[in-house]
Image (cartoon, rainbow over all chains, first blue to last red):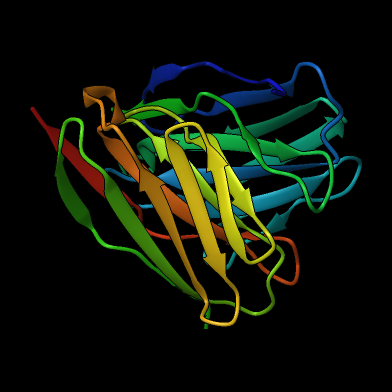
Length: 115
Length: 109
């Protein structure tokens, strides 16, 4: 199957700093990429949807100025958590699809801890 | 609103069979997915149903009834490594995945 690489796998940062998470589709062109957040023992929560070359569409309640998403190419999307706070500590997962009727391929996730 | 329901937790015995149910109410339907997620890892794709009926893939099978808004994932010959959360997700009319809360499956020897 298609491979989505997410980096880093885990990161610890200080409050107030920014963290960038990369999501790459290695062997296919991802027309759409999704960013999710998952708190312990909870389901995946969609944060935003991004299409290559256009602005991301954020879900209600997700601050677009805090969670910056860039989808500059068909193989790379980045999520930057700005001015991180301890409550931003979570598991962030990206996924990518090639079209509307295809499965979503997931990155391995990034465990963010803000101290 | 959109809603996907699945049991929170199930327990089964190694070697046995378990069925995990999922019911959904969404704005439109463009397919139903089952994913497996081990703790601390990203979900991995198990199955996809868009037409009514049963899809079989090795030890795992998935069933869909669109008229009833119902699906199940059937796991046979359970192994200890099958202990994980199983997520049901539906693509709505905007092709956006709507996720269930997941069913934690505990396998006992």
